Figure 1 (spheres, one colour):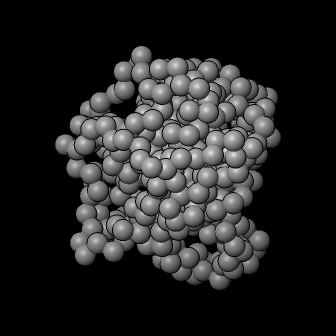
Figure 2 (cartoon, rainbow, N blue to C red; figure 1 turned 90 degrees about the vertical axis):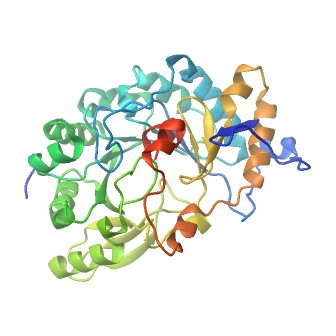
Length: 374
């Protein structure tokens, strides 16, 4: 198909940081990575700059109403920069701006310009639904952004409308073209849902080929606001590979590659014609043992796992006047005690259903994917 020309807060209340553990802050300032309880480093930080979104995708925001974070609680760009600057010496070297839809945050290129020169950050990227990308791609590139991942789950207008409840597919395709023209390295993320888009694997690969983007097919996950998730709707990575093999010939694995290197959510493959793609099998083959990611919500809560029940309130530390070293020590303490294996634990449940019902999400909007930041 040619389509293109210090404390933690959560449902259980505040939680103290682990007692009896002290970090040598002078070592972290020099760049020695802090390791968690399973010897995983903190290398990747996902920064949500807004909890708002201009789409209502069925696997992420299927409900009619949501609880939004108060405007006064949202971190300023200067506060985000200070927190990122504090975390880089702990080992963070990859920063991804996300949301909600990050391009809804006015003046995002200013934040990119502030973060891009930070010593130690070797990969600065953005995840977007692409609706507003055409108007902002060049400014983001000029500000120092290196890579963009566009979420695109279907190339069919009727399906796009049904999925997102918006008629904005042309704008997303324009965004892909603009990102390519601006010289941004480009990826496409596609969530595959049984009965919806599993027949579009080849079309999406062709779309990626046209804009020189590597496509990553993602298993439908039961995280955040996926209140209508079921295991029956999951198309496994093995099923995807079989479908692509039937169409193109056997895909050959070419190793793991994360965002900018390091640990990887995606296993990469190459088709006989040279086309490369990735599969993120988070449901059937979770990669918890290699997970090096933390997530900073738009109001300053740090979450250590997509399935985490609680977060650490860094905004409270920041706005109470904590120094850079005090923030580093707080994060080091909580990361050192981290033993999260959420996806692996879910995999072994005898009966797997929705992770969080609507009632629980409404009690704590931080656990919504559009707030937590994927």
